[in-house]
Length: 403
Ligand SMILES: [Zn+2]
Image 1: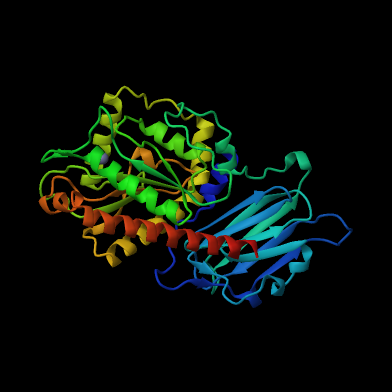
Image 2: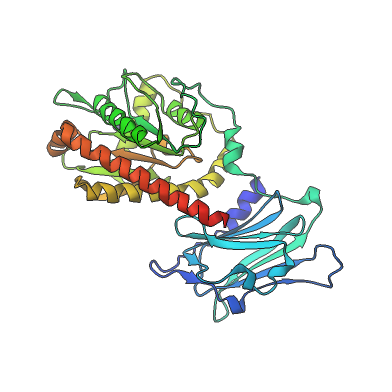
């Protein structure tokens, strides 16, 4: 596992594609070739993809059946068909297409277990070339990447969930709505209102609205009781949630923040306001007697990183849907409505997660909105539209992948 992670990191070239233009494949200058004579046994192979621009990429192997996966960011296969790739008939099957937000994926089924002996993006020639060299190995030497998300689901749960989600047997979309704070932790307080009470009101209204259109909802708390941050994530995972949405309405020093703000996980975030909020949430949790330390071992850490590379673009995609639906609904937003933050509750590596500050209780205009049932109704409508739109978009991508 560690070796695969190291490989993955080493191969993740920090090259940025131009923002608007997608890099394209030069099909005529790309090929899959095999070494030596065909004696009916797997042979060393080389995949050569000629690109219009250098792009960040990652290469790894999967099992069941053995497959080579090449992901490229800011890249589009366009009209090129995998069957037209020179040498495509050397492998049982080859597919490609858009994967997730900005990433395209090539999957080549391999004629047996293989190892990646080399993979490099060369920019020396006129056009950048991505080369992946493969050699056949014995079954016991085959090192496919574990399905990170699946492995995570088998990890022992760190904390027993306080709220047992109802069994949802069908394959409806399930959204975990997480009203922040609660119980002994009221969150921000202003003018006789508490953050805990406001976000619960919005969460309950959102649940009703989502259930009306057939979306399953699990609430991490449905009354004024306390839930630790870990338990909130655990409840979402146990319910098989497809999306985790945490709702807050925090306090920040006057002038620091106003308007709805959407946060996604970013370990490197250094936004001052976001840091202040993250510290405060962590402290609230500690004050309530929860222990946040020591739940991840090294293996879990590696698995989380792997899984997050798949989940993070989906979280960001949802954040964009949410921002655009709130704008359409005329909800006042922060001048930078989507930000990264180190909020622990967004750390689930296998569930797309977003934290929405509905507004800031410390801001007089926000406070007026947050306590106004009409405004809250608009906010709930925007939430429902965003979840619905995102789910359709994700569904569309899944269909593309299966082709
Ligand atoms: Zn909060």
